[in-house]
Image (tube, rainbow, N blue to C red; front, side, top):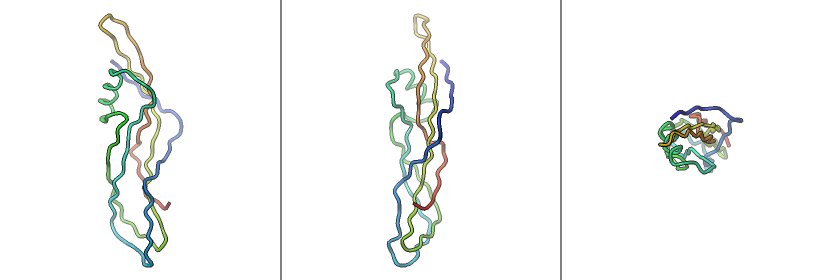
Length: 122
């Protein structure tokens, strides 16, 4: 069984909830925000390909994984900020051989987090 990765398309960012300071005074402090990431597959794939990819990625496909991010932030009255999680599409090829000796290759697009999380105004 083999696996190869090829990068496709542009990176995209997905914002988390926007946090707003509704007070009349600045708010300062360390905030820890929990957010969800996922490894999304948009097509039906074989159980074998799903097992190989889940093992390679270290995550179950099409499920939410909770993560957290801590940041020191100062929000002036009326200011808002959010976390932005970067995703990119990768195409994986999964090659396997069955008990009869036939080899098949599946190409699977996986939208996955790049590991980049930024905190900025929203």
